[in-house]
Length: 451
Image 1 (tube, rainbow, N blue to C red):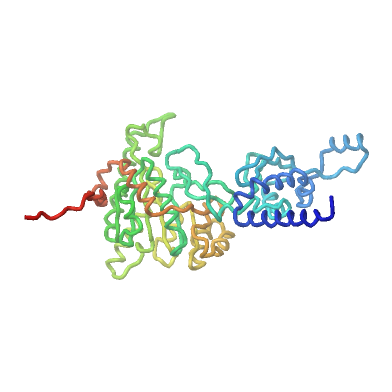
Image 2: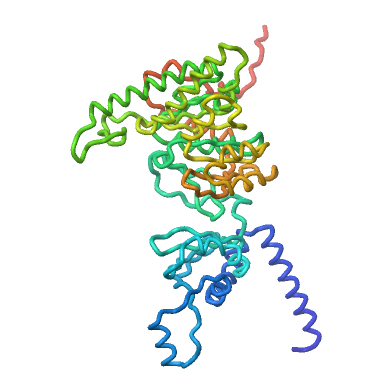
């Protein structure tokens, strides 16, 4: 190579490096499949053994292996890493399984995720159980929560819908059959309303009855009125609606008892009933739950105690009757009054967006995953939709809801109005839907008649 070409080649390399760094920062989803994926794949394959050794995840080889190595090579036998499966590239990272050696547990691998992340140069490493003796390592190449792109949806199942994206690039699925009731908290502009929109829009396409309690005069849930079977917009209406839902639940228990069956066909919930008599599932969405607890007079206190009692009964007994609760609010704490902590104990799922005080985060996550409280309190205002999701099993993860405008969610509910089931007990509470048909406008401007 001639000397005049050397500066040109250096300039080209520098320009390519700057360009790659710019693309990686601004367009990570484009950088990853082009450059990030091949580099990360090479690092994992080449350095797997040494990285596992430096992370303390290697074990002493078996006695048979020791004898074979010494007989064949007469060299020192070194500890061996866990057996690795095939490395599979994905749209956002890499995945592979490892077989735990005797004496190892998934927590040993989970404790080394930060070291693995630095060693392989990826954004994050997540550990998931993959069967007895196996764990799956999920490597994420970039921050998937910065710009949410939901993965390809799985086949639709009743009462099971993806509503957000986890930080390991998998979908956060709201499964009412597995987690019947949930508490969702978030301050103003935290993204709680966006989460609620995605949830209602997903449920609107399924054969379920949607019931809403929105004590902000209905401004949050009124746009979904075409799809709602009932809507209460203040505490007085909620006090009338909740007893009706409790009676509906009791009627369903009577139905289960009358058709309970025996032998292998015996059942204790509505899902074991024949299709022709099974009642439609009901999802009760309560927005601004604190408004149900606030009181100003003695009469309000009596009404509050009745409403809270009905909510607790629905949370305790509603699952078997096919009635599920989605309780949302900006603030939730023991100081709300009698029954607050008892109601929270029945809400298995927890989603905590950015909150204004640590007490709310502790109320949402402190009893199931104390280490997640600090993560929820560190959510910045510049990241709306970001939240920490957990359940009473102790597991938790960061999630973010995709953007969905109020107009689009309202359109989905209007187009799904045919799915509104016939529930005679709720007809009195059915919201009035105005006729939104556009008025006909003449194309030719009329002219006044002249004599």
